[in-house]
Image (tube, rainbow, N blue to C red):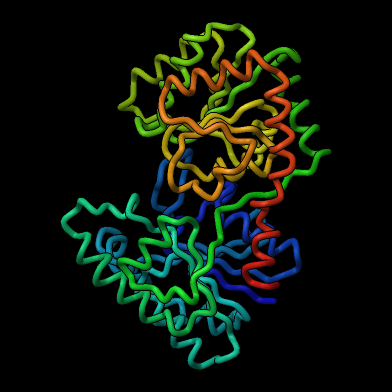
Length: 378
């Protein structure tokens, strides 16, 4: 089957474990032919940068086409107006078109193609919520309640399904875009369910690399370490607990304006700072650790950690309400609860084993192949 992803605001970046990468990898492995239309922005060591128009096959086996803005980057990136993509549609002749967040003017080219090729199935999803839509900006109503809404409502009659990644995204589309509830369906962010054999291999590889003991409790924390990430909570927790059997692995990017955090990370005895790591390495470290710590803002790494059979400590965001009953996640609200959570695992290894058992049972639930099979019925 030929599947075309229109991800013109996705900033597709090779080597990550984002939804787009996971979709491409799984679908190519299952024998489908994949073309992904992206914008010319991508992440380099955690920093969003502009690249150039390009057309290549990435490590997943998908064809990636970077489409430039029609106007200059400033205007094009605000109004999401790209050069024509219709030639790619005609050339590829997809069986399925999947529009990632259809907030770009080129949806009208997708509509035109659907009208000329009635057998093609068109899907869309949304990653937009009240949390990330910058409601306090003066242009919110112009962009979201008028422009983006008009784009979505234009393509809505041609959609088979409209997926949302969380309840906040569903509510936003219903209230702001006035989305048709009858075609909406939940499709959470996902990862790759790691086999027990691969889990053991990665775990032993990383723990042997650093010489960790069987009695050590390994914490892992990752991402772009701005203030919302609450990285300082993890560092403070280690200092308060003051136990040499706790080791913290940190992987990610620290903005230059957060000098104090950089100093703290580099000065702590039981902290190993690995800098920015790519997707395959991330999976190895998630398998190796005893607890993935996410005390701050949401990250797709949480879903990856679930697929890696890893117990988790996480801030209790409403975004994660569908995960509240996962017995492998310890939910926290503040730094004291983070300290207590780590302390409870240190003091009761049976509790950690219970978390691990739940993690093993949960890992398939957010597996990309499992979810796509239900969503797209392929």
